[in-house]
Amino acid sequence: MKQIFEQLMFLPRMFNTSSHKVQECGIWSAVCSFIIWLLDWATHFTIHIVGVSVLFATTLFIIMVADFVTGIRASKFEFLRDRPGEKWAGESKKGLRWVIKYFTYIMGFYLINMITQEVTNLNLGIIADLTGIDFEAVFVFLLKIIKLFLMLYIMRWECVSIDENLERLGYDFKIFDFFDNSLTAITSLFKNKTGIDLNDKKDENK
Image (cartoon, rainbow, N blue to C red; front, top):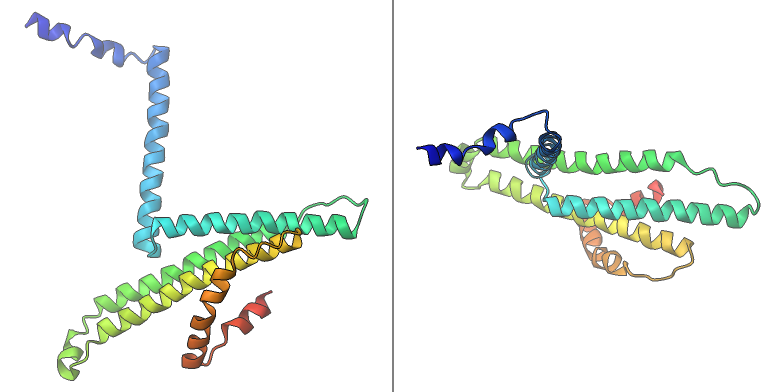
């Protein structure tokens, strides 16, 4: 019995809050717990609320950061080129527009995910029994197609914007022509089916 209690002699030292090591371990434990909670919350929000994967959300965030950085550098480069000797003060509006644009994308995916969940909760099985058409599956399929198109179109938009910023900096890489060319057919198909020309809207936003 005595040998068992001797194995537990470390417990009083572990809970000795006056010890510097215990305090340090407690702080790091709290920090790690907060990081784990934050990652878990972000994962839940991204997958179950927004309705996209963590990989896509992270990739989009990185691409948008690259677009923001290259855009700022291109603006500074053009300012110093056109106004030599003047001091470039930066553009705070670009940062605000970047935040608004990112949350607009998130809200778009959230609305699609919310409508998809509402459609599945409507219990359209009765209508399917009467008509022989599974309207729930049709609506969900259409929403998923819209979501996929939105994902590809946003990625294409941001990547082409990075390419344009690099051109303004003097680098003519054309590394994102794949996104521009691959979605041209999809955009044309969408225009033929709906009559909406997304390229015109893109030009207006610029």
